[in-house]
Image (cartoon, rainbow, N blue to C red; front, side, top):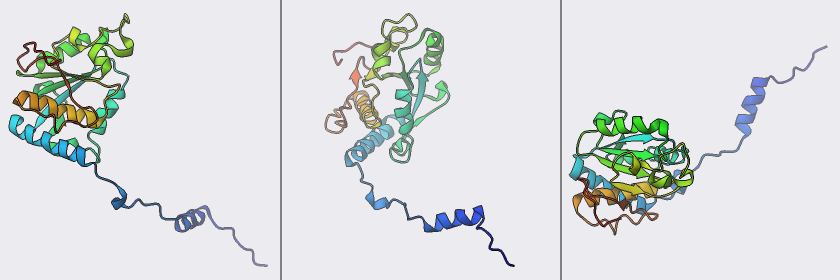
Length: 210
């Protein structure tokens, strides 16, 4: 007497695949953020003018919660794609034009931060990213931190936020480069409250722009 075999696991898998509805997302359903594109293009123009088309950034995480790092990492994804505007992160401080620092600067990270700062060629730009890096944030007053980057190395610019969004970081970079270029980025950097707090000019002289 013939017996009927049960379908194999592989057959069930293929059956599930073939019977599942299409879930692909139509690329036309994605909206393009024109404000971001405009800001990015302006940033690219400043990068070409001031840095021959390539702004190299060295990032130091100095006791951060990793929130700011997640936003900075997002700058490299396929949506923000900051490298198309000439901005990229580098592994060696000797290749960097700008130093970005996140976190309140833990005591264990003080020496590493100072060494990285000293290894970046002059003229160097130092940016404190996030509330923790600006004044210690929620960690301010703890025995384990130094309450901000400015207590360890000179800081030229601040990007506030807890954490600042990728759009705000891009807008703040445009404000920073416009300040270095001596021009006004007000009309182009209004991207999510993106203006960076300017603490000093490029040669370290204190100004009234805070």
